[in-house]
Length: 197
Image (cartoon, helix red, strand yellow):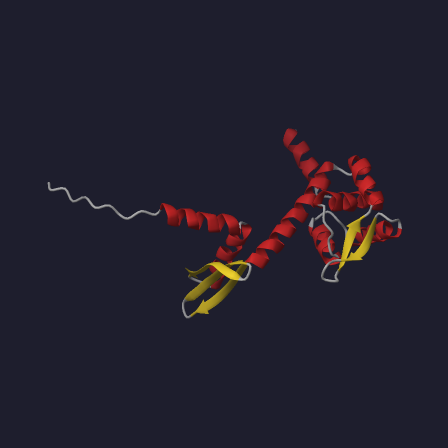
């Protein structure tokens, strides 16, 4: 019985949002929690890829938020359009958040944090796959203000395994880099037993 309830709750948590007012709260809450302007493309990708936001409801909600002074479009330092949360949108996020299920709020904010982390990694980490006669190299470069912190080539027996290695590195590039540095710093010369027996 308990497993059936858990299954039912899980299915409900993965259901698409079907009403605009809840969507309004979620989008305002997202912008409030991440505390940064986002481009239209970024907001779209975060919202739609969250898995529970329908494109048509998203568009309707966005139109409502823009026309009712919850958010507005401004230009960033590069002259690109970004959505900025206005006081009315902030009040919506803070005062009405409990009308949108916490599981959806958390999932949406987590999707945004993962999105921006991935964007940061893609600027700092460059991975290319170099085909070989037998196998493939994973060519990894860790960048810091234009300079290479690390450049590394790893051999993989085929392209699929090379891409698997690359995708695993991109899950946590800083952790990968840190582990390599730790390994290098803790590496010791092999000791030999020179005792006479």
